[in-house]
Image (cartoon, rainbow, N blue to C red; front, side):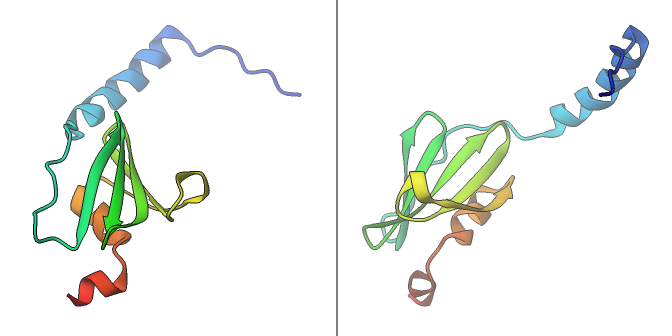
Length: 105
């Protein structure tokens, strides 16, 4: 068993000075506007931080908003969906779970 001593205040300040500017560069997240009416793939905000993505009326996946990151889960049921991507771009998140049939239209 290895016990680590707590980090010194000076070390914590150095780490904080490196992390804070990087966090400020991340985009702010606001709810995404609804999909266009003629779109084959549509999404709906179903929870404070979760979108349900549907193609032709069938659920194909979910997008969880975790901080500034969109976590994409593919599958018709949330409890069995599989993570396929993490991205900062909502359009890329939707495209990653778009079925091939929807792309052909």
